[in-house]
Image (tube, rainbow, N blue to C red):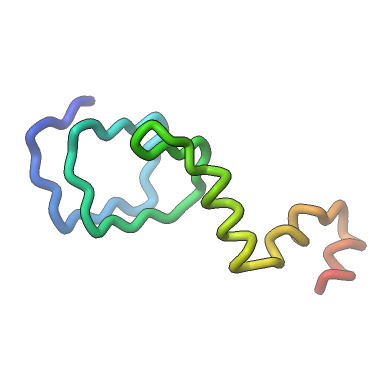
Length: 78
């Protein structure tokens, strides 16, 4: 599906599958994106690792959760 020359100002996309979404030559001002991101590229720069590192810095429990390997680890973390 191609969407061209369309004003989506103020739009909210909620619980959508935007896999392989490509935005080209568009204005993105005051944009907020949240969700399960993988291979997130902005202006030809993959920022996925940067975003993950920043989230880990803000929420150190994320790294602990990833390291858990079974119910005993979850109980110990609790």
